[in-house]
Image 1 (cartoon, helix red, strand yellow):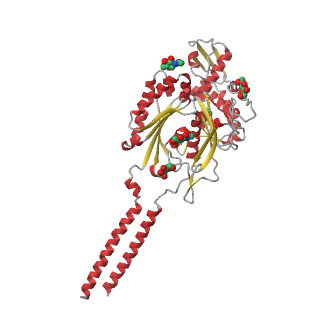
Image 2 (cartoon, helix red, strand yellow):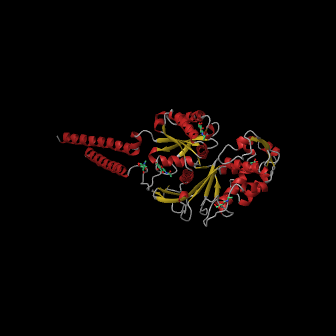
Image 3 (cartoon, protein in one colour):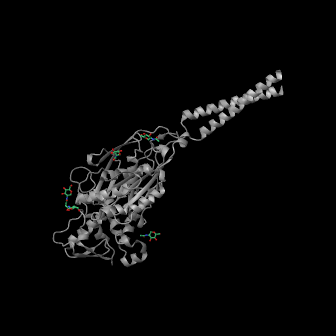
Length: 497
Ligand SMILES: *[C@@H]1O[C@H](CO)[C@@H](O)[C@H](O)[C@H]1NC(C)=O
Ligand SMILES: *[C@@H]1O[C@H](CO)[C@@H](O)[C@H](O)[C@H]1NC(C)=O
Ligand SMILES: *[C@@H]1O[C@H](CO)[C@@H](O)[C@H](O)[C@H]1NC(C)=O
Ligand SMILES: *[C@@H]1O[C@H](CO)[C@@H](O)[C@H](O)[C@H]1NC(C)=O
Ligand SMILES: *[C@@H]1O[C@H](CO)[C@@H](O)[C@H](O)[C@H]1NC(C)=O
């Protein structure tokens, strides 16, 4: 009778023990596997942005973990595809061609984005100064080009959110956001396990040189006096009051076009001596080709079909003088300015100089923080090299080889006389193409803003398990283990007795 009673008790205890074990295992599994990951399928998201520049178009594919999308340094570039042919603004007389040119890159991007996620992949096309100039020349043609690119992108199974022209201020601001997002100067996951604004980190300025415009954006030490150049952001709970300006026509291609036009107008004849082109270099260009943009105005006497012969003279001193004439450095009113009378507070802090600034200086091996003196010496020496020697030394760079001297002198003039850097602040300029394996340009900042991935207010802690669930799981396991141990102890106690 006693034995039987004990048997029943033992069975009950054994049953309790088994149930406890099963429960503990379930609790353990639940706590280890994040419930969210199991029930919310796509843990990685994608975004596509076309950068329709004046000289060419690129398609950037970005990727980020869905559950952390408000953090910083989370979005990375998976791919960049360069569209064959010129920028979309060059298709003014063949708008359908602009649309068709985008297809190979769209096909490439859709090989990266998994099929089941394509329909929710935000896709944008942003055009910059090339299209700003075309719109100035003929608005109808600009609209036709946009209609064609939108038609083609619309045929693809993506979440197409439109094609449009960015303003110069947007282009500058989004470049600034890209730089500071990638360098984590806006918000950082601190040792206190919180997303915080890094106290001792200064934000960086952004210097962008495109084909048709150049942008300067930074946080000045003084309030911005001119509303047209002031930008305000609230990001992660911190206010940023920035200065940003975009100079149309002062991108590399258009500036060198203005230079050639100025030399043509000085020479009067069809023979142009070009002090920035290497000695021994010669090219022919028609009046129509030279004066094909609103940045240059053809003299009434020149007939479009006339052929101009441009001969390099490799004379850096004259080149500097000719380049300086492209700018008006006088400020007029009693306020600090950049050039052409545009207000600009004195530059402040560290800067990233990317796109054309980087490409030109990279070719000249000037991207490793050389002193201004060394930079000057290198550029002057390069400008004196003759064409046949350059062709022999750099057979890979034939297309742009004759322009590097002009471009380098243009960049020096723009940075020093235009933006007013000096021999001290020069060392604050970092010539870079990438940060955190991602290209620096406006595209990432644009996508972050339009997908609301940079919240205005500070981030709550969203990392790992939610505290409630985690605490619950831990207490349950402890409780289960204790119950199990007590049960096992009782069982042994009864057995031995
Ligand atoms: C990101 O921020 C937005 C707006 O601030 C919010 O609606 C969203 O839930 C956040 N996403 C995550 C994963 O925290
Ligand atoms: C602009 O382009 C349209 C379409 O190609 C053309 O019909 C029109 O004449 C052009 N306008 C100007 C001002 O050139
Ligand atoms: C240069 O800029 C100043 C101030 O904006 C202006 O007064 C002056 O007329 C400009 N000079 C030329 C040659 O355009
Ligand atoms: C840059 O450096 C490389 C490697 O040292 C050299 O081959 C090349 O000639 C240099 N480029 C210029 C423009 O001096
Ligand atoms: C960012 O995007 C929002 C729309 O989502 C827009 O209202 C805002 O102006 C954008 N910011 C900038 C600087 O363009």
